[in-house]
Image 1 (cartoon, rainbow, N blue to C red):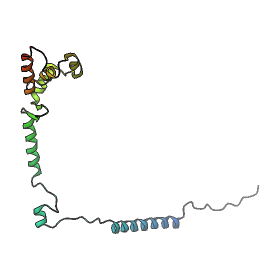
Image 2: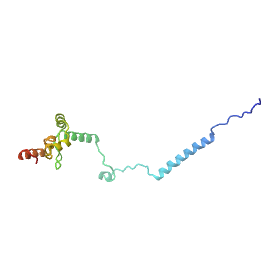
Image 3: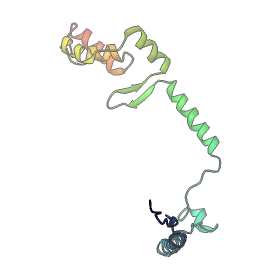
Image 4: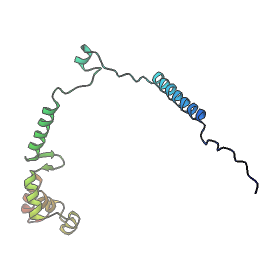
Length: 153
C-alpha cells in the first residue's frame, strides 16, 4: 500500500478573529455607554438645602422619625379595631370589636344572606336584626316590628 501523505491538523479557532471580536465587542459597549450617558441625564438631583426644602416645593416630604410614625399609626389602628364606631353612618355600616365579631360568628355561624332574604319576605329588618344587632337601624326595625304587630316596616 502506498503511503498517504498526511498534513498537519489545522486549528479550529483563529486567535486573531477571536481577539478582534472581543475588542470590537468592548468598543461597542463603551460607545453605547457613552451614547446613553449623553442621551439620558443619569446624574442624581439633590436639591440644595434652603428655602425650597423648607417650603417643600422642590423636595419630597421626609419623615424625621418614621419608626415612631409607624408605631403611632399601628396603635391608632389597634384602637379602632377594639372600639365600636361608624364606618359610614348614612349607609348603616358600623364597626364592632374583633372579639365580639368572633364570638358572634362562633355562636351564630356565617349567615346565608340569600336564603334568609328569600324566606323572610319582610324586607331587611330580620337580616339586620340578626346580622348586626347593635345598630340603630336594627333598633328601629325592632320598634317598628313591635308597633306593626310583628310585621315588616
